[in-house]
Structure formats: structure tokens, C-alpha cells
Length: 136
Figure 1 (cartoon, rainbow, N blue to C red):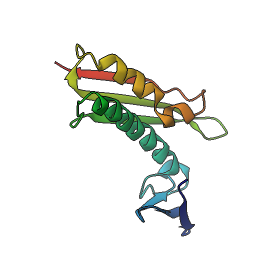
Figure 2: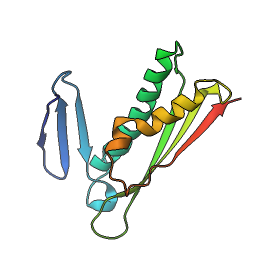
Figure 3: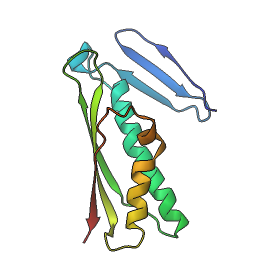
Figure 4: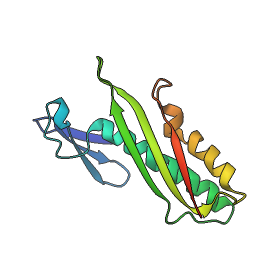
């Protein structure tokens, strides 16, 4: 169990503290939803959680096979609904892997990406495509 505590500081700005480490994250409402866009929005953190969970889960699978994925790069694009209620409708992830597609581990890494805990926790109506770019 992990506890995260925090405080709403006004003007749509929050600070959250990770209990085990003491690290903090700040959030701000996005410019298109009454905020300043001065920090990650809460839904930006959902997108960040997805892409970093994918990378971490893939790295765990690779390490079990004696392979390090250092150099793996990623990008996620978040799309919000245009109708009410406001919600994430699409999180499109692109990965650039430091391995060739011919690597025997490739299929296991692709399965791991789709099986990461955040991917499995998001609502089924959120479109979550993943594009894998393998090195030459």
C-alpha cells in the first residue's frame, strides 16, 4: 500500500507528496480548462503513468532475459473528449526500442506493453494504441 497526500493550493493548483519517498508532484488545470497550464494536469499524469508503466514493465521482462532496455524512448499523446463529461478518450503511445524486431524477446516485450498495470486499469473505452519502432 502506498499513501499519497497533498494540498489544494488554490487557483486550480495542487501539490501531492509520495509517502514512501517524500517526492512531490505539482498539478495545474490545463489552459483549455480554466487553468494556467503551469504544470502537468491530472490527466497528463494519467498519460505519463501509462507510458512510464509500459516502459517499466517492458524493462522488467527484458531484464529477466538478461537484456537492458536502456535507451528505450517513448511518447504519449493524450486526447480529451469534446463532449461532456470531460474525459480522456485516447492515449496513443509510440515506443522506440534499442533492439531489432528480429530479437526473440520482441514478442514478449509487445505483450508486456499491453499488460502493464496502468494499461489494464484504464477504462475499456479509452483507446490505447501502441506503436513499436524497433532499431534497424
